[in-house]
Length: 119
Length: 381
Image (cartoon, rainbow over all chains, first blue to last red; front, side, top):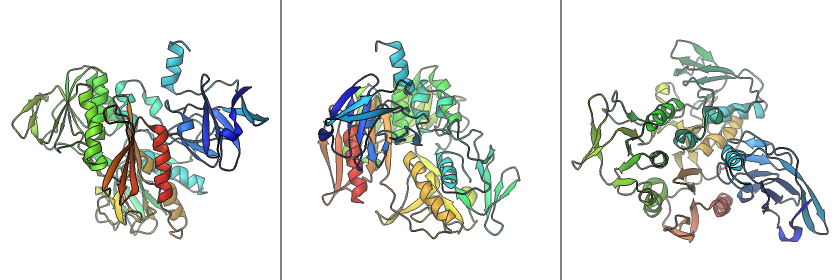
């Protein structure tokens, strides 16, 4: 489990980006739920932590793809592949992320950069 | 469904998503299944994305539609409720969605001259990509978004690029004079020539273009010319059928047309904008994706639903590695202020206001702040 931030430091409606590789974002919804998904949009290189959070859905800040925070499913194009979801544990007021062991769906530009260069 | 691009696909998805389980026929004049157009002037043209990457449908998607592709609609019969196709076929329907989009404007007299391109469709992009690969001197006519994106891509491919724009400042229409000048300053930053305030008189060349002739007498040598002078709505096929036309299909705030059971979405549709109190034809990707849901609800309810207020328009552009984002309407603003970043660093977040109220926002490489402002604009309306 990787500690992300204190729950008290993440207001509702905000996101925190965990700078691991690939990065993960933690979202605190307006209803008080906390979800973690891969931070990089599966369409192109954009940080979903910078996106538009509404209910249990985040809209990519660039091209408006929408992802369901609970399942990672694509709710609106241009993205076609889901983002990975990660288990969230909150202990003693700290948000921890259990990073999924599934392969991430990174966009073509990021995937080729990771494959070609140092991680 | 007449039109098989993003607006048509979004309408088909909305129909199924909202419970319509009847027969669904999608008519498209191109032979391709729905594909994504924004990359055509950027990653696809640059060669970093292939055709498979452009496909809009997902692998497991099952819309249960019959696709009539490579079939152009030529007329709509309101009494018979049929759509006529160029090959003589007729499709009868209880409800009709008009999503025929827009076509690139051309330069009169440029027909048949090799080396002259417009960019709207996948086939256009294939042809232009093949020409750019040979290198040479590219002249882009029109400093709007398509022109600027093509210039940026061609510059990155190593071509010698000149952009010519008839107006004194490119992008002044969508972004206003001040910000239009800052964004179009990206050309000079990269050594791409920008000639403004001079119209194009014509093209020279025998079978292949060799120069662009300017109205002030200058001649700009060219091996390839891209004409990016806007688009016109594809609604000629509707002339005289009873659907009211005015800068495209004239629509209510929910996409309803003057004919019951007929809605229009996407670039061809001139929706009433309750915020502006006027009709506005929005040619943005996001409009084609978001608005069909409301229009389809109206169609399925027989016009009995109250239209909501759509989000303020939003579009993006990528030029010379800079992410440009814009939301709202610049035209009504009486001031524009840079709230973050600087013009020199090309990283501005600028807010347009009318009587102190934000009406539009522009970001250059400011995605996080931009989204915050975009949310505020939407909440205020």
